[in-house]
Length: 206
Image (tube, rainbow, N blue to C red; front, side, top):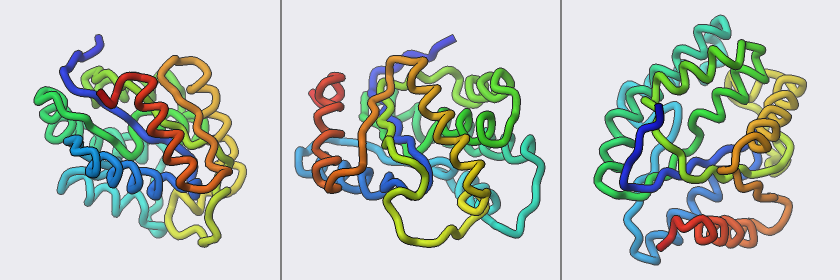
């Protein structure tokens, strides 16, 4: 069952090191200049509990089974969705989330090898079926736009893992109509303009 709302929910997805944080920052600056009220949150995170889970999931010394990792992501998502995202959507606001359900499908199913049906069931359970209006996928191979070294559990998972995640994202995006594939090969400001154009095309910025 899909949960309907009055606001707009936009998600940003992409592999590690493709410039996602930069593009979210540039979008926030653009919306502020336009006087558009928007709520920005991230996953895992967004709430006090979610940020504690984020620290654990990123801790390279924390060993855990893939199933444990999945459930931690979903627990943080459940809190963020119910405490932060849904109230903002019900108030008619624009909500921008740095990673959401597609990350979990790409990373935990395609990357870790967990059954996709189980992952997608838990995604629906954690979110209550909240509808995503548009997903901006920064379409570049992992670590394509960064020179920094890997520094947390997910980044240190290995090249083969991240290649599977990238392939997973492209598969997910090809199956649904809400993905906008945005290349990050150009100048970051050119990419930012493409993102704004995509939001306008989908009626998000009205």
